[in-house]
Length: 152
Image 1 (cartoon, one colour):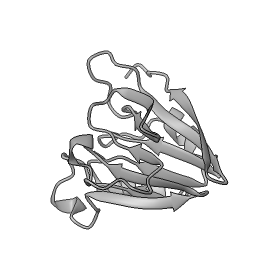
Image 2 (cartoon, helix red, strand yellow):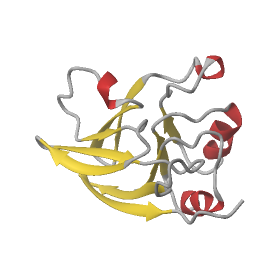
Image 3 (cartoon, one colour):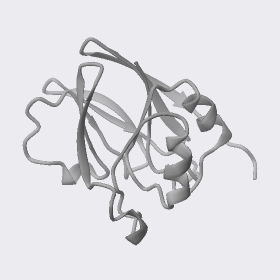
Image 4 (cartoon, helix red, strand yellow):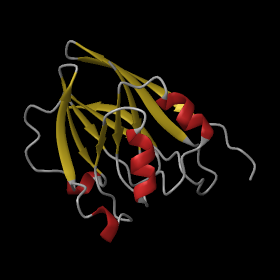
């Protein structure tokens, strides 16, 4: 199963991101979506698992603060700000978060921590990134995807 993992789109789905979504079997979004039209557009590509970010206001009240989902035998816990994770991560293989706009892929205490960075509007000359992952039979392989910065 091929997963697209993204966060902090802030109202912008770049062409390079859409190209990656075409190959996804499911999409995990770590919040700061900024508008319902982005959610609707993402759902056209694959089943969407999404959490609400600090910039997702009244329109996003039905989107959960945190979400736990198992795909391909891998259990993901998703939250926008990792400081707001549920206390109990037992049974969780992967934590997906956003908020900082900085790419993170590290293993701590047997849990894989993933922040796909931001693939929305560019901030502070940071890279524009997302992740693609292959999950199968309880294993995950993650690939960092660098999205070209189009001159606006």
